[in-house]
Image 1 (cartoon, rainbow, N blue to C red):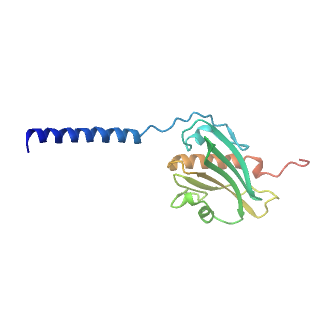
Image 2: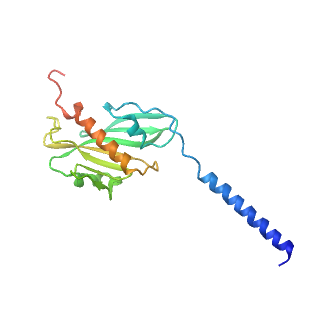
Image 3: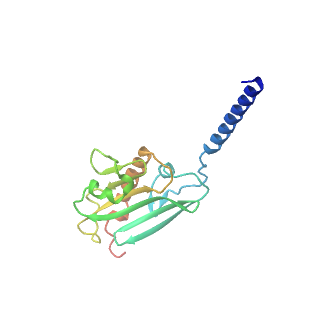
Length: 186
């Protein structure tokens, strides 16, 4: 190989390396900043904003909406920049079901970790928790209230953050009107 051919080859390799570095820098962009504020109450349930923010993606605006797909479920949907990113659900299930039996209804919990007391199962994207037995209302006789936390195509994969949000949200629901009979006359 001539000196000139060797120089061309080195320049080509140098250019290819520089181009590859530029492409990888562009594809590894910093995640979007979380420029929104998370309220301290989501659809009527008080929960620590930092716990919620930990499982949300970056973006500019956060909106919440309550949905009742059936008589036994209340879903609080959170959207960042108009894209659904998190759903927190309260769902009544037949009494005596276990968390392990309920969790398959929430696909993100597949291969999740079960808590020692078997009340919670969670993965990096979703979790299901059973409220305490004293959580009962005449509106839902012979049923147990379960809580579900599900991320939606956000790239979030943080089992510890999901577990913290799930347990805190479950405890907040247990202390809310969802787990008590309405006062007489209301």
